[in-house]
Length: 158
Image 1 (cartoon, rainbow, N blue to C red):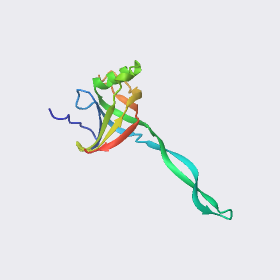
Image 2 (image 1 turned 120 degrees about the vertical axis):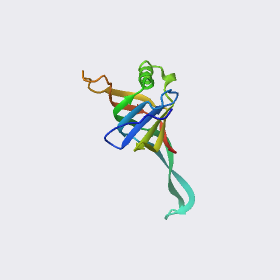
Image 3 (image 1 turned 180 degrees about the vertical axis):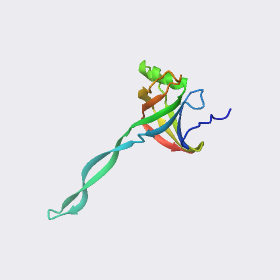
Image 4 (image 1 turned 45 degrees about the vertical axis):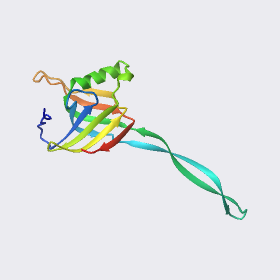
């Protein structure tokens, strides 16, 4: 079965795929931000054997090494299509079932329907979502925003 065609005014789209989902795409969004990853810096000083100064003693050397890494929160905006797998993911996390959290969420950036970049977010789980306005002229349930916490991300071939 081929991937669904997304018709929109823009030639760009962002799709989300959850690991273990039976759907080819779990969500299609118009915008995102939060590609944020920070590596803590640990600084320490040590005395080296190099002689330094009038005292002719060892010199101080500043060394920086990487500490703990921290991922940010990904915010997906203006969801146009959300799968039942994604709704179940929300429910599992709300119910405290951490052992069933998704390990990987893949985000694909499309241009004119062609994948241009793919990112994998590890240890990802939803922290917040907001449903858009519901009216009587449509039966669609639109997600205005989804915020997903993650511990790491990497770019993989499209």
